[in-house]
View (cartoon, helix red, strand yellow):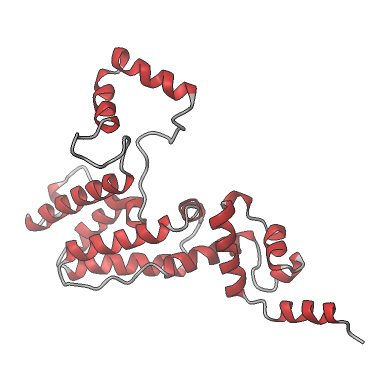
Length: 237
């Protein structure tokens, strides 16, 4: 006769699904980081044996693909106004908001060796906003290259993040005025905001991201107004 513990275990395994496994992995990574995620650790979280997971995900890569699918698939569908620049801006900022909820997602996106269907769907929708706005296929092609990872809501940092308490960082900052005066000048601007500003010392990541995105979109708009073609940029292929 089956005891109560065995019955509970069988019921738990029976209710396990790919969606539950993936969402549990997302929750685990949100709390512990993507580096600590393992099939064994996830199995412990779900209170099942590791082999039970392999009925729903074929491998660690399949698990990561599925996690990315869910995150990208949940990027908010922003309302379209018919004004391409505004619509693209909203779409990219929606992607950024989604990815900021899951700090590990950038590393997962960058680690994928091939685009998942959800990633391709997002790129297709974003490309469609440019084309629907009247941009040529050639200009849109170059635009997507120019946006790069910014289209996913993140960008390459100017400098690697370093804890403020790190002695090496402090020494480098102290040496800036004597050896790198131009960098020292912009560093002072970042560390000392305007007197009437509520911004804390240091760079505002969101403001920096939106500033660069707006620069790109304004430049794209200018090229579109000029009816740009690849022939005008002879050094580009």
